Structures are given as structure tokens and as C-alpha cells.
Amino acid sequence: MLSAQDTQLLTRVGPGAPMGDLLRRYWNPALMSSELPAPDCTPIRVKLLGENLVAFRDTSGRVGLIADRCPHRGASLFFGRNEDDGLRCVYHGWKYDVEGRCLDMPNEPEESRFKDKFRHIAYPCVERAGMVWTYMGPLALKPPFPEYPWNLVPDDHVEVSKRVIQNNWMQSLEGGIDSSHVAYLHNEGGGQRQIRNANSATQNLTRQDTAPRFELMEIPAGVLIAAQRNAPEDRYYWRINIFMLPFWTAPPGGIGPATRLTAWEPMDDFTLMRWNIYFNPERPLTPEERAQCHQVGGVDLGNEEYLPPTTQPGGAFHGIRNEENDYMIDRELQRTQSFTGIVGIGTQDQAMTETMKTDNLGPILNRTLEHLGTSDSGVIAARRILLRAARKLRDENVAPPGTGDPSVFRYTAAGIVLPRQESWVEAARSFFAAPKAMSAWPSEGQRWR
Ligand code: FES
Ligand SMILES: [Fe+2]
Image 1 (cartoon, rainbow, N blue to C red):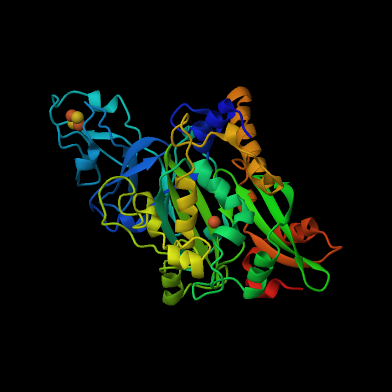
Image 2 (tube, rainbow, N blue to C red):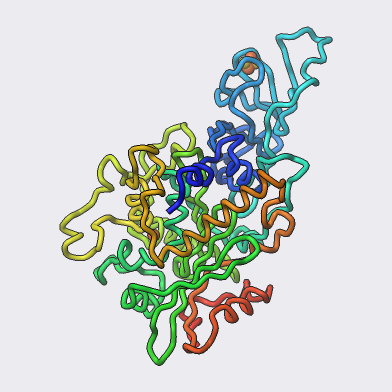
């Protein structure tokens, strides 16, 4: 349970909100590079942390991410002309470059230096791993680019997908941490929709021991959440999830040979973008493997079938299964094969988090009504870490964890089977301590010992 006040502190991310200030101190994904396929292409709307932005790729190929509201009289720059290394507002012709400089003010006298007197809001962007990353905090405090594991491999080792989810980001992030729901929500009953990625041995262990015991280990930028399940031959299966600041989670397993991490990035207080990053540390992904990452009914996002695209922020990434059509739940499938009757693991998650609602806080779940059990210890830890970092920043101006050292983000999830007397903490420590280990992360089947 969380007080109403802490719930507000935890969930609200707009400009000026303490959690918004915290999230703005990290490099975060803004869009896929492919959404701006060529120089001078059509600008697109982006919404991040409650801010309406427009992204464009200029004539030189640089990506700009600037406030959508023209600083002259507030017209939307989405309608702007993307030409000659800048975006020109179609209302009175003022033009801005990727750094927010006003390049031209054609309706002012030529001798006027007015255009040099201000900067439009523009956030720095870096392209890596098929994504455009941005930093929305104070420029003087811009941290080094984070060494998330996929940022350490060539781009062709990485596949990215995304989808809009209509609930507060924390609801989804908490689902990404909580591994005890996997045996229920994502139980496909062994039918043809059986979870395909993971080695069936560990999947079976997950299903057979549905009440795991939880242990936590705090890491510099988050927490490892280990779920202990019984395994044959006097061993334990440790399924180690991660929460990394500001909003990354990773369950063990991925798709085939790809490891996965997920970002639950707030577009605003009531909408988030779920980013799934798949990568192989050792080699490029094949076209088949890339396709698998998006496949209908697949293990992860599943049914990545989108509604017809719109030009609204994230408008090309709304799944066809949604709250309005009850996520196309198939009650016959639910009776015979699948725990939910909903197709696609991502949609199963979405169906739960989008429909968690309480009257007095609108679409943000009222945490004072919760009854948390031992299986929620990871969720509690992640909330604590976020609240602590936001308070320390707000009250003591303490730099957020990880913003001084990009190497603290070199984590993925893990699934390890160990003799009962052996410590998972030691196993995890030695694994994550060796930089080489990241590139040598074995496939799930090889982790048995
Ligand atoms: S409102 Fe954009 S140029 Fe006037
Ligand atoms: Fe899930």
C-alpha cells in the first residue's frame, strides 16, 4: 500500500513534478529512427513526459526534437515546412533548427536582431540501436550516454518494437517487475500457443512452482528481483528480473536467441509507450529472428497488429486488441487452452493494466486500496527506489543514481539453476561483474549447471 500523496509523487511526470524532474535527468528513447526515414521528410508528433513535441530530420540528416508550440504565437509546428536545415512554421514563417535557434523571421524588419534573442525548446538527440534518444533535463547536467547492453553492440544486433498503452506508466512498470503473474496471466496451457521462446524446462519450472519466494539485491541504478522456484535434483531455479532506473525492466528469456528489455516510458500521466528492445550480444539478428520479435501471437508483444495509423503522438502504434473490444477475449479459448483467452503476451499485460482503475484517482490506480503480498516485494522495492531518488533530487539536489556512471546500466535479466546451497547473489555478482560476461550471455538452455 502506498499513501495517496506518495502515489501522486510516484506517478506524475509532467514538467515540474518531482518524478518528472527525475525522469528528465536520463537519456530516454523518443522515437524509432525509421519514423524519420530521410532528410527533410514529414515531421512527426511525439509526446514525452507530458510535453507535446515535434520531431524532424533536417536536410543534413540530423534529428530535431522541439516543442510543438511555436514560440511566436503558439501555432503547431507539426504543420511546419521541413526545408533547408530547419522547420518553418506555416503561420508567419519563423524557422527553427534542430538546436532551437531561430534562423529566420521573415515578417520582421530585416535589421531586427529579435531572432537572436531567444531559443526555442529543443532537446538534444542521439541515434543508437535504431532509436532516437533524447535528454530533456538541464543541459549543463546532461549525463554520459548510458551503456545499456544493446548500446554496446552494433545496431544490426538489435531489433526494436513499440506500442502505446493507455494507463499510467507505473502500472505497467510494476507488471514488468512482478514475475509471479507469469504462471497465470501468460499461461497458455501447453496448447499450440505455448510460450515459444524459453526453454521449456524453465517454463515448466515456472508453471509447476507457482508461488516463488522472492529475494532482492539492490544495484547502483535499480534492483535485481530473484524469484526462487524448486527445481529437480535438489536445486533451485532463480528467475532474476531487473528494474533499472528510470523505467526499464527485463524478465529472463527473450525471443529465440534475443535477449529483451522493456521500457515503460510515460508519454503523459495516462499514456505510455512500451518499448521492447531485443538484442543478441554476439551476432546480428537474422531477418527471420527480427520478424519473430513482432510475430502474431508471439511470446512477447504478440499480435503486433496495429490499428490504421494516425498522425497523433504514437498514432501508428495502437494495437487492434484494446479496451473497447475487451482485447478480443475468446471465452472458448479461455476454457480450453489459454488462461486468459486473450492472444499475445503483451496484450494480456495491457488488458490487466489498462483496466486497473479506481474512481477517485481516475485512470491512476489508487494504491491505498491495494493488499500487497510477499510476491510484490520487487514492486515495493522499485517504488522505494524511484521515490527515494525523486525526493533526494527535489529536497537535496542529489544527482539521480547512474547519471554519473554510464556503466551501471550494463544489466540484463537472468535465469539460473543452482544447487540449493549456492547463493544466487554470488552467481549474479560474478556474472554481471565481468564485462565480458555481457557478450557471453548464454542462451537460456546453457544456463543450467
Ligand atoms: S506562430 Fe509560428 S511563426 Fe507565428
Ligand atoms: Fe506479463
